[in-house]
Image: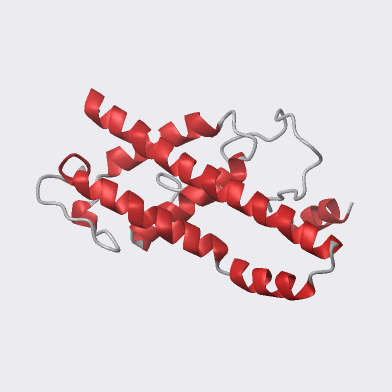
Length: 180
């Protein structure tokens, strides 16, 4: 089903997406450190200016990354989309290589299993994928609808957030768990 070139290309794209996430994460951490410093130094005007700038920070970084990835994919479009494929803002079904993107997602999962922020990395992947392709592809085969990496074994500081998933008929139990 896959050939070495397709596997290599899936790995390359998965690494590019993870690299885009890591760049975004470094930028957001840097901005957070700066926000803390400004607060401690009572630089209120800078805090206001920076917070306005950060409102669209994620979208700008994802859009910038997608533009770069789109350019890279256009260079490889024959192998990803077929000989007559073209990259558009939203891909069409006839130009979407389902098996290739399933493999790319699986490769990405392999890359993030040892990552310290796997859920955020999954979210970044989803953002990239959803900017590149139409809604008809928004399912668990191509994007992350549930976390794929367990957080329980990751050695990290106390989590800032905790994820809760509501099973059918378990809304009350989930709320109780949240309030504990």
